[in-house]
Amino acid sequence: MLKLVTGEAGDYYYPDLDQFCVMNVAENRVKSEYFPDTIKEVVFQPGQYQPTWDGSWSKKSDERTKRNVEKYLRGEVETGMPDNVVFQAMFKQGDYVWKHITNEVDVGHYYCAKS
Image (cartoon, rainbow, N blue to C red; front, side, top):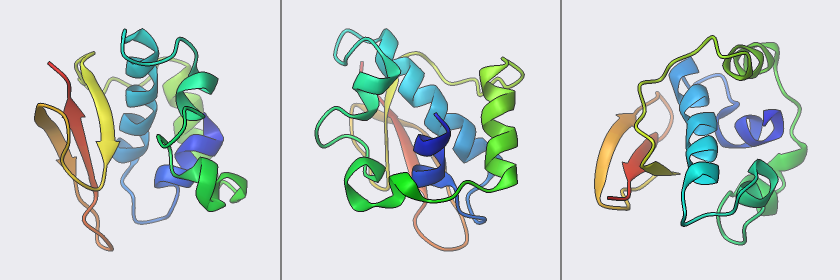
C-alpha cells in the first residue's frame, strides 16, 4: 500500500485526504465484483495504476506518507467514501464524481463511482 500511495499521491502537494482516498479506492476495488480480489491483483491489474508502469513504484516514501499509510491501515482514518467509489484519476470517469481533491500543482484527483 505504501508504494501505491507514494506513486499516486506521495508528493508534498497532495493533501493527506488524497492519500487516504487512494487507499480507500484500492480497498473498494477488492470488495467490488468488477475488480480482482486482492490488493496486489488490483494494483497490478493491467492499465490501472500508473506507478506500476511509469517508474514511480520505486520512488522513496516520505515520512508523512508512511505515517498516513500506517494510520489508515490501523483503521484510524475514515474518509466517508462509499463502497462504490472505485475510480481515482486526474479526470472524471464512472457514473458520477464523489469527490474532487485539488492541489496547488495539477488538476488533482477525481474519485468516481460505479452505480
